[in-house]
Length: 75
Image 1 (cartoon, rainbow, N blue to C red):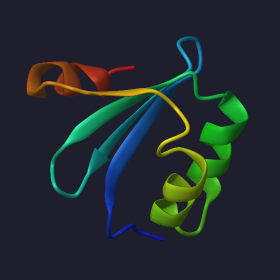
Image 2: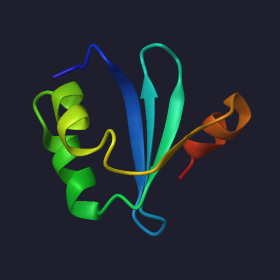
Image 3: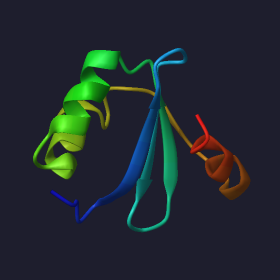
Image 4: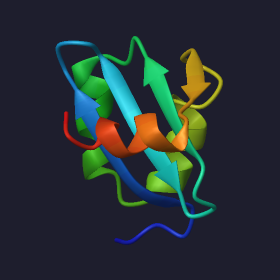
């Protein structure tokens, strides 16, 4: 199901880094995200609900600059 909050996301299992782009255009990298959490996020019916309950505020994040965010999708 498409999300009304999250535009797209990508996960790098080697770095345990989850890059999330919101519909607002802001992009963040969440670090230390286990592969099973990323897999469950991918399968979740409601991405926004899952994100709020299992990722937001639980993992350290940094906002990605536009240039860095564009490169991040090449993981």
